[in-house]
Image (cartoon, rainbow over all chains, first blue to last red; front, side, top):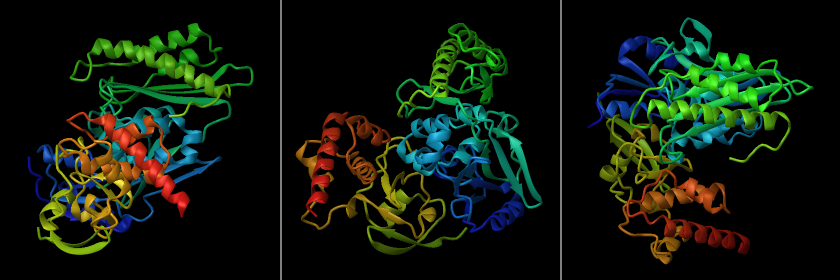
Length: 297
Length: 163
Protein backbone atom coordinates (compact mmCIF):
# COMPACT_ATOMS: atom_id res chain seq x y z
CA UNK A 1 0.00 0.00 0.00
CA UNK A 2 1.23 3.48 -0.82
CA UNK A 3 2.30 5.93 1.82
CA UNK A 4 -0.46 8.41 2.71
CA UNK A 5 0.33 12.06 2.06
CA UNK A 6 1.37 14.39 4.85
CA UNK A 7 3.29 17.52 5.65
CA UNK A 8 6.68 16.87 7.21
CA UNK A 9 8.23 18.99 9.95
CA UNK A 10 11.81 18.82 11.21
CA UNK A 11 11.91 21.22 14.16
CA UNK A 12 15.36 22.27 15.37
CA UNK A 13 14.46 22.58 19.04
CA UNK A 14 11.93 21.46 21.60
CA UNK A 15 9.94 24.72 21.67
CA UNK A 16 9.45 24.60 17.92
CA UNK A 17 8.42 20.93 18.08
CA UNK A 18 5.90 21.63 20.86
CA UNK A 19 4.49 24.58 18.92
CA UNK A 20 3.91 22.47 15.83
CA UNK A 21 2.36 19.69 17.90
CA UNK A 22 0.05 22.08 19.72
CA UNK A 23 -0.95 23.83 16.51
CA UNK A 24 -1.99 20.64 14.74
CA UNK A 25 -3.38 18.68 17.68
CA UNK A 26 -4.79 15.30 16.71
CA UNK A 27 -3.70 15.82 13.07
CA UNK A 28 -0.04 15.58 14.08
CA UNK A 29 2.04 12.53 14.89
CA UNK A 30 5.53 12.39 16.34
CA UNK A 31 8.16 10.36 14.56
CA UNK A 32 11.37 8.95 16.02
CA UNK A 33 13.06 6.57 13.58
CA UNK A 34 9.87 5.84 11.66
CA UNK A 35 10.41 2.08 11.76
CA UNK A 36 7.04 1.43 13.41
CA UNK A 37 5.14 4.55 12.34
CA UNK A 38 6.11 4.28 8.66
CA UNK A 39 4.85 0.70 8.52
CA UNK A 40 1.56 1.59 10.20
CA UNK A 41 1.07 4.43 7.73
CA UNK A 42 1.83 2.24 4.74
CA UNK A 43 -0.58 -0.38 6.05
CA UNK A 44 -3.28 2.30 6.18
CA UNK A 45 -3.60 2.08 9.98
CA UNK A 46 -2.59 5.71 10.50
CA UNK A 47 -2.73 8.75 8.26
CA UNK A 48 -1.59 11.83 10.17
CA UNK A 49 -1.67 15.05 8.18
CA UNK A 50 1.45 16.31 9.91
CA UNK A 51 4.53 14.31 10.78
CA UNK A 52 6.81 15.89 13.34
CA UNK A 53 10.27 14.37 13.20
CA UNK A 54 12.32 14.43 16.40
CA UNK A 55 15.57 13.61 14.59
CA UNK A 56 16.92 17.17 14.46
CA UNK A 57 15.60 18.48 17.76
CA UNK A 58 18.61 19.85 19.63
CA UNK A 59 19.48 18.16 22.92
CA UNK A 60 17.23 15.18 22.39
CA UNK A 61 19.92 12.79 21.19
CA UNK A 62 21.94 12.03 24.29
CA UNK A 63 23.03 9.38 26.74
CA UNK A 64 24.47 10.42 30.07
CA UNK A 65 25.33 8.47 33.18
CA UNK A 66 26.26 9.62 36.67
CA UNK A 67 26.78 7.42 39.71
CA UNK A 68 24.51 9.61 41.84
CA UNK A 69 21.86 10.30 39.23
CA UNK A 70 21.75 7.24 37.00
CA UNK A 71 21.12 7.10 33.29
CA UNK A 72 19.36 9.55 31.01
CA UNK A 73 18.46 8.51 27.46
CA UNK A 74 17.24 11.33 25.24
CA UNK A 75 14.01 11.09 23.27
CA UNK A 76 15.70 10.72 19.89
CA UNK A 77 18.57 8.41 20.91
CA UNK A 78 18.89 5.44 18.58
CA UNK A 79 18.67 1.86 19.82
CA UNK A 80 22.13 1.04 18.40
CA UNK A 81 23.66 4.00 20.27
CA UNK A 82 22.29 2.69 23.57
CA UNK A 83 23.48 -0.85 22.72
CA UNK A 84 27.03 0.38 22.11
CA UNK A 85 27.33 2.81 25.02
CA UNK A 86 30.05 1.66 27.45
CA UNK A 87 28.26 2.80 30.61
CA UNK A 88 24.98 1.24 29.52
CA UNK A 89 26.82 -2.02 28.90
CA UNK A 90 28.52 -1.80 32.28
CA UNK A 91 25.67 -0.66 34.52
CA UNK A 92 22.54 -1.75 32.61
CA UNK A 93 23.48 -4.98 30.84
CA UNK A 94 19.85 -6.13 30.44
CA UNK A 95 19.08 -2.96 28.49
CA UNK A 96 22.25 -3.31 26.41
CA UNK A 97 21.30 -6.93 25.67
CA UNK A 98 17.81 -5.95 24.56
CA UNK A 99 19.15 -3.13 22.39
CA UNK A 100 21.77 -5.40 20.75
CA UNK A 101 19.45 -8.34 20.14
CA UNK A 102 16.18 -6.83 18.97
CA UNK A 103 15.22 -6.37 15.33
CA UNK A 104 17.99 -5.91 12.72
CA UNK A 105 21.09 -3.70 12.57
CA UNK A 106 19.25 -1.39 10.17
CA UNK A 107 16.21 -1.01 12.43
CA UNK A 108 18.43 -0.50 15.50
CA UNK A 109 20.27 2.28 13.61
CA UNK A 110 16.98 4.00 12.77
CA UNK A 111 14.65 3.26 15.67
CA UNK A 112 14.79 5.06 19.00
CA UNK A 113 14.33 3.68 22.51
CA UNK A 114 11.72 6.36 23.22
CA UNK A 115 9.88 5.32 20.08
CA UNK A 116 9.99 1.68 21.12
CA UNK A 117 8.27 2.67 24.40
CA UNK A 118 5.81 5.14 22.85
CA UNK A 119 4.79 2.60 20.20
CA UNK A 120 3.80 0.41 23.18
CA UNK A 121 3.88 -2.97 21.52
CA UNK A 122 3.38 -5.62 24.23
CA UNK A 123 6.58 -7.20 22.85
CA UNK A 124 8.67 -3.99 22.93
CA UNK A 125 12.13 -5.32 23.76
CA UNK A 126 13.41 -2.28 25.65
CA UNK A 127 10.36 -2.15 27.91
CA UNK A 128 11.03 -5.22 30.07
CA UNK A 129 14.58 -4.23 31.05
CA UNK A 130 13.57 -0.63 31.67
CA UNK A 131 10.72 -1.84 33.90
CA UNK A 132 13.17 -4.04 35.80
CA UNK A 133 15.44 -1.01 36.30
CA UNK A 134 12.46 1.07 37.54
CA UNK A 135 12.77 3.61 34.74
CA UNK A 136 10.58 6.68 34.36
CA UNK A 137 9.79 8.74 31.31
CA UNK A 138 9.90 12.53 31.21
CA UNK A 139 6.98 13.95 29.21
CA UNK A 140 7.13 17.57 28.15
CA UNK A 141 4.38 19.81 26.84
CA UNK A 142 4.17 23.55 26.32
CA UNK A 143 3.02 24.12 29.88
CA UNK A 144 5.70 22.05 31.59
CA UNK A 145 7.04 18.60 32.36
CA UNK A 146 5.90 15.54 34.24
CA UNK A 147 7.70 12.37 35.15
CA UNK A 148 5.78 9.10 34.86
CA UNK A 149 6.93 5.72 36.14
CA UNK A 150 7.19 3.26 33.29
CA UNK A 151 4.84 0.91 35.21
CA UNK A 152 2.15 3.62 34.86
CA UNK A 153 3.03 4.56 31.27
CA UNK A 154 1.70 1.54 29.39
CA UNK A 155 -2.10 1.45 29.13
CA UNK A 156 -2.70 -1.30 26.58
CA UNK A 157 -1.45 -2.56 23.23
CA UNK A 158 -0.33 0.60 21.41
CA UNK A 159 -1.67 2.79 24.21
CA UNK A 160 0.31 4.93 26.62
CA UNK A 161 -0.12 7.79 29.05
CA UNK A 162 1.39 10.17 26.46
CA UNK A 163 -1.14 12.95 25.75
CA UNK A 164 -1.49 14.72 22.39
CA UNK A 165 0.82 17.72 22.58
CA UNK A 166 3.36 15.86 24.73
CA UNK A 167 6.81 14.65 23.71
CA UNK A 168 8.71 11.84 25.40
CA UNK A 169 11.75 13.95 26.14
CA UNK A 170 13.88 11.49 28.08
CA UNK A 171 14.02 8.16 29.86
CA UNK A 172 15.50 8.26 33.35
CA UNK A 173 16.88 5.15 35.02
CA UNK A 174 18.09 5.09 38.64
CA UNK A 175 21.73 4.19 39.28
CA UNK A 176 22.24 0.53 40.19
CA UNK A 177 23.35 -0.35 43.74
CA UNK A 178 26.41 -2.44 44.60
CA UNK A 179 26.27 -6.22 44.30
CA UNK A 180 23.53 -6.29 41.73
CA UNK A 181 23.01 -8.16 38.50
CA UNK A 182 20.55 -7.90 35.65
CA UNK A 183 19.79 -9.73 32.43
CA UNK A 184 17.35 -9.96 29.54
CA UNK A 185 16.42 -13.02 27.55
CA UNK A 186 14.10 -13.20 24.59
CA UNK A 187 12.73 -16.00 22.55
CA UNK A 188 11.41 -15.93 19.03
CA UNK A 189 10.71 -18.64 16.53
CA UNK A 190 13.20 -17.85 13.81
CA UNK A 191 16.00 -15.72 15.19
CA UNK A 192 16.76 -12.53 17.02
CA UNK A 193 15.42 -10.61 14.04
CA UNK A 194 11.88 -11.81 14.66
CA UNK A 195 9.52 -10.06 17.07
CA UNK A 196 9.85 -11.60 20.54
CA UNK A 197 7.33 -14.28 21.49
CA UNK A 198 8.49 -13.99 25.12
CA UNK A 199 10.92 -11.59 26.78
CA UNK A 200 12.02 -11.65 30.41
CA UNK A 201 14.16 -9.07 32.20
CA UNK A 202 15.44 -9.37 35.74
CA UNK A 203 17.32 -7.41 38.34
CA UNK A 204 18.66 -8.75 41.65
CA UNK A 205 20.63 -6.99 44.41
CA UNK A 206 22.32 -8.87 47.25
CA UNK A 207 23.48 -7.76 50.70
CA UNK A 208 26.92 -8.62 52.07
CA UNK A 209 25.62 -11.94 53.39
CA UNK A 210 24.29 -12.89 49.96
CA UNK A 211 20.62 -12.36 50.85
CA UNK A 212 18.41 -10.84 48.15
CA UNK A 213 17.57 -7.27 49.14
CA UNK A 214 16.04 -6.20 45.86
CA UNK A 215 14.47 -8.16 43.05
CA UNK A 216 12.51 -7.11 39.99
CA UNK A 217 11.22 -9.12 37.10
CA UNK A 218 9.43 -7.87 33.99
CA UNK A 219 7.83 -9.71 31.10
CA UNK A 220 7.28 -8.79 27.46
CA UNK A 221 4.91 -10.21 24.84
CA UNK A 222 2.84 -12.19 27.36
CA UNK A 223 0.24 -9.59 28.44
CA UNK A 224 -1.53 -6.58 26.87
CA UNK A 225 1.41 -4.46 28.06
CA UNK A 226 4.91 -5.21 29.32
CA UNK A 227 4.40 -6.10 33.02
CA UNK A 228 6.26 -6.40 36.32
CA UNK A 229 5.91 -9.50 38.49
CA UNK A 230 5.26 -8.21 42.04
CA UNK A 231 4.44 -11.62 43.51
CA UNK A 232 7.70 -13.14 42.27
CA UNK A 233 9.65 -10.11 43.50
CA UNK A 234 8.10 -10.44 47.00
CA UNK A 235 9.01 -14.14 47.07
CA UNK A 236 12.64 -13.30 46.38
CA UNK A 237 13.21 -10.32 48.64
CA UNK A 238 14.70 -11.15 52.02
CA UNK A 239 15.54 -14.69 50.94
CA UNK A 240 18.79 -16.51 50.33
CA UNK A 241 18.82 -17.34 46.62
CA UNK A 242 18.42 -21.10 46.82
CA UNK A 243 17.34 -23.08 43.74
CA UNK A 244 13.94 -23.64 45.38
CA UNK A 245 13.43 -19.90 45.91
CA UNK A 246 14.33 -19.20 42.28
CA UNK A 247 11.99 -21.94 41.09
CA UNK A 248 9.08 -20.59 43.12
CA UNK A 249 9.73 -17.07 41.83
CA UNK A 250 9.81 -18.33 38.23
CA UNK A 251 6.47 -20.06 38.75
CA UNK A 252 5.10 -16.82 40.20
CA UNK A 253 6.21 -15.01 37.01
CA UNK A 254 3.94 -17.31 35.03
CA UNK A 255 1.03 -16.11 37.19
CA UNK A 256 1.88 -12.50 36.27
CA UNK A 257 1.52 -13.33 32.56
CA UNK A 258 -1.70 -13.24 30.57
CA UNK A 259 -0.56 -14.55 27.20
CA UNK A 260 -2.64 -15.11 24.11
CA UNK A 261 -2.36 -17.53 21.20
CA UNK A 262 -1.06 -15.78 18.10
CA UNK A 263 1.11 -16.37 15.03
CA UNK A 264 4.29 -16.27 17.07
CA UNK A 265 3.43 -18.74 19.83
CA UNK A 266 0.59 -20.37 21.73
CA UNK A 267 -0.41 -19.09 25.14
CA UNK A 268 0.58 -22.41 26.71
CA UNK A 269 4.03 -22.34 25.17
CA UNK A 270 4.47 -18.76 26.32
CA UNK A 271 3.55 -19.69 29.90
CA UNK A 272 6.08 -22.53 29.88
CA UNK A 273 8.76 -20.27 28.48
CA UNK A 274 8.09 -17.50 30.99
CA UNK A 275 9.06 -19.94 33.71
CA UNK A 276 12.14 -21.21 31.87
CA UNK A 277 13.42 -17.76 30.91
CA UNK A 278 12.66 -16.28 34.35
CA UNK A 279 14.70 -19.03 35.98
CA UNK A 280 17.62 -18.46 33.56
CA UNK A 281 17.45 -14.71 33.94
CA UNK A 282 17.50 -15.00 37.74
CA UNK A 283 20.51 -17.32 37.57
CA UNK A 284 22.34 -14.81 35.34
CA UNK A 285 21.42 -11.93 37.65
CA UNK A 286 22.75 -13.80 40.67
CA UNK A 287 26.00 -14.75 38.96
CA UNK A 288 26.54 -11.13 38.06
CA UNK A 289 25.60 -9.87 41.54
CA UNK A 290 28.16 -12.25 43.03
CA UNK A 291 30.81 -10.73 40.81
CA UNK A 292 31.14 -13.56 38.34
CA UNK A 293 32.12 -12.30 34.88
CA UNK A 294 29.42 -10.71 32.75
CA UNK A 295 28.72 -12.86 29.69
CA UNK A 296 29.47 -11.23 26.35
CA UNK A 297 26.59 -10.56 24.01
CA UNK B 1 1.35 19.82 0.38
CA UNK B 2 4.19 21.04 -1.72
CA UNK B 3 7.45 19.46 -2.61
CA UNK B 4 10.42 20.27 -0.41
CA UNK B 5 13.85 21.14 -1.72
CA UNK B 6 16.47 18.95 -0.14
CA UNK B 7 20.17 18.36 -0.58
CA UNK B 8 21.09 14.71 -0.86
CA UNK B 9 24.81 14.09 -0.43
CA UNK B 10 25.22 10.80 -2.21
CA UNK B 11 28.60 9.18 -2.74
CA UNK B 12 30.36 12.52 -2.38
CA UNK B 13 28.09 14.47 -4.76
CA UNK B 14 25.38 16.86 -3.61
CA UNK B 15 22.09 16.70 -5.47
CA UNK B 16 19.41 19.37 -5.02
CA UNK B 17 16.07 17.63 -5.52
CA UNK B 18 12.46 18.59 -4.95
CA UNK B 19 10.58 15.73 -3.32
CA UNK B 20 7.20 15.11 -1.77
CA UNK B 21 7.69 14.47 1.95
CA UNK B 22 6.14 11.01 1.86
CA UNK B 23 8.63 9.59 -0.63
CA UNK B 24 11.19 7.13 0.63
CA UNK B 25 14.91 7.61 0.20
CA UNK B 26 14.97 4.39 -1.84
CA UNK B 27 12.42 5.79 -4.29
CA UNK B 28 14.23 9.09 -4.66
CA UNK B 29 17.64 7.44 -5.14
CA UNK B 30 16.24 5.17 -7.83
CA UNK B 31 13.71 7.37 -9.56
CA UNK B 32 15.11 10.90 -9.23
CA UNK B 33 18.84 10.21 -9.17
CA UNK B 34 18.84 7.08 -11.33
CA UNK B 35 20.88 5.14 -8.79
CA UNK B 36 19.15 1.83 -9.31
CA UNK B 37 21.81 -0.24 -7.57
CA UNK B 38 19.73 0.15 -4.41
CA UNK B 39 16.99 -2.48 -4.62
CA UNK B 40 13.57 -2.50 -3.04
CA UNK B 41 12.43 -5.93 -1.92
CA UNK B 42 9.82 -6.05 0.83
CA UNK B 43 9.44 -2.26 1.14
CA UNK B 44 8.82 -2.69 4.88
CA UNK B 45 12.24 -2.85 6.48
CA UNK B 46 12.54 -6.63 6.74
CA UNK B 47 14.65 -7.79 3.79
CA UNK B 48 17.57 -5.34 3.75
CA UNK B 49 17.80 -5.14 -0.07
CA UNK B 50 17.46 -1.35 0.16
CA UNK B 51 20.26 -0.92 2.72
CA UNK B 52 22.35 2.23 2.29
CA UNK B 53 24.74 3.97 4.67
CA UNK B 54 23.43 7.14 6.28
CA UNK B 55 26.22 8.98 8.08
CA UNK B 56 28.11 5.68 7.99
CA UNK B 57 25.38 3.53 9.50
CA UNK B 58 23.35 0.91 7.68
CA UNK B 59 19.68 1.87 7.36
CA UNK B 60 16.72 0.68 5.34
CA UNK B 61 16.21 3.32 2.67
CA UNK B 62 12.65 2.08 2.09
CA UNK B 63 11.71 3.18 5.62
CA UNK B 64 13.75 6.38 5.56
CA UNK B 65 11.94 9.44 4.28
CA UNK B 66 14.07 11.24 1.70
CA UNK B 67 13.45 14.54 3.52
CA UNK B 68 15.01 13.04 6.67
CA UNK B 69 18.23 12.43 4.74
CA UNK B 70 18.58 16.13 3.90
CA UNK B 71 22.26 17.14 4.18
CA UNK B 72 23.32 13.78 5.55
CA UNK B 73 26.03 11.65 3.97
CA UNK B 74 24.60 8.77 1.98
CA UNK B 75 26.61 5.91 0.51
CA UNK B 76 25.00 3.60 -2.03
CA UNK B 77 26.52 0.62 -3.82
CA UNK B 78 27.45 2.95 -6.71
CA UNK B 79 29.77 4.88 -4.40
CA UNK B 80 31.82 2.00 -3.07
CA UNK B 81 34.34 1.38 -5.83
CA UNK B 82 37.33 3.75 -5.86
CA UNK B 83 37.19 4.00 -9.66
CA UNK B 84 35.19 2.44 -12.52
CA UNK B 85 37.84 -0.21 -13.06
CA UNK B 86 38.68 -0.99 -9.45
CA UNK B 87 36.04 -2.61 -7.29
CA UNK B 88 35.96 -2.19 -3.54
CA UNK B 89 37.58 -5.18 -1.78
CA UNK B 90 34.18 -6.31 -0.47
CA UNK B 91 32.73 -6.27 -3.99
CA UNK B 92 35.76 -8.14 -5.34
CA UNK B 93 35.51 -10.73 -2.56
CA UNK B 94 31.83 -11.34 -3.35
CA UNK B 95 32.81 -12.14 -6.95
CA UNK B 96 35.84 -14.22 -6.01
CA UNK B 97 33.90 -16.32 -3.50
CA UNK B 98 30.77 -16.87 -5.57
CA UNK B 99 28.71 -14.87 -3.09
CA UNK B 100 26.42 -13.48 -5.78
CA UNK B 101 23.62 -15.68 -7.04
CA UNK B 102 20.57 -13.82 -8.35
CA UNK B 103 22.16 -10.59 -7.14
CA UNK B 104 19.09 -8.91 -5.73
CA UNK B 105 20.33 -8.88 -2.12
CA UNK B 106 23.93 -8.15 -3.06
CA UNK B 107 24.00 -4.36 -2.90
CA UNK B 108 22.37 -4.29 0.53
CA UNK B 109 24.46 -7.18 1.74
CA UNK B 110 27.69 -5.43 0.70
CA UNK B 111 26.69 -2.17 2.40
CA UNK B 112 25.84 -4.00 5.62
CA UNK B 113 29.24 -5.68 5.35
CA UNK B 114 30.88 -2.28 4.83
CA UNK B 115 29.19 -0.85 7.94
CA UNK B 116 30.25 -3.90 9.94
CA UNK B 117 33.89 -3.83 8.81
CA UNK B 118 34.15 -0.08 9.38
CA UNK B 119 33.26 -0.69 13.04
CA UNK B 120 34.83 -4.10 13.50
CA UNK B 121 37.75 -4.83 11.11
CA UNK B 122 38.25 -8.39 12.39
CA UNK B 123 34.83 -9.92 13.01
CA UNK B 124 34.21 -13.54 13.98
CA UNK B 125 31.89 -15.64 11.87
CA UNK B 126 29.13 -15.08 14.44
CA UNK B 127 29.70 -11.31 14.32
CA UNK B 128 29.51 -11.37 10.51
CA UNK B 129 26.25 -13.31 10.70
CA UNK B 130 24.87 -10.78 13.19
CA UNK B 131 26.08 -7.94 10.97
CA UNK B 132 24.04 -9.21 8.02
CA UNK B 133 21.10 -10.40 10.13
CA UNK B 134 18.96 -7.70 8.52
CA UNK B 135 19.72 -8.82 4.96
CA UNK B 136 17.86 -11.74 3.46
CA UNK B 137 19.29 -13.81 0.61
CA UNK B 138 16.42 -15.78 -0.86
CA UNK B 139 18.88 -17.87 -2.86
CA UNK B 140 20.09 -18.78 0.67
CA UNK B 141 23.72 -18.36 -0.31
CA UNK B 142 24.80 -17.26 3.16
CA UNK B 143 27.85 -19.50 3.47
CA UNK B 144 29.58 -17.91 0.50
CA UNK B 145 28.53 -14.44 1.61
CA UNK B 146 30.03 -14.95 5.08
CA UNK B 147 33.22 -16.32 3.52
CA UNK B 148 33.42 -13.33 1.19
CA UNK B 149 33.02 -10.83 4.04
CA UNK B 150 35.63 -12.64 6.08
CA UNK B 151 38.06 -12.59 3.13
CA UNK B 152 37.33 -8.92 2.46
CA UNK B 153 38.06 -8.14 6.11
CA UNK B 154 41.44 -9.79 5.74
CA UNK B 155 42.20 -7.86 2.53
CA UNK B 156 41.19 -4.58 4.13
CA UNK B 157 43.30 -5.25 7.23
CA UNK B 158 46.27 -6.07 4.97
CA UNK B 159 45.80 -2.86 3.01
CA UNK B 160 45.80 -0.89 6.25
CA UNK B 161 49.04 -2.50 7.48
CA UNK B 162 50.80 -1.76 4.19
CA UNK B 163 50.06 1.94 4.53
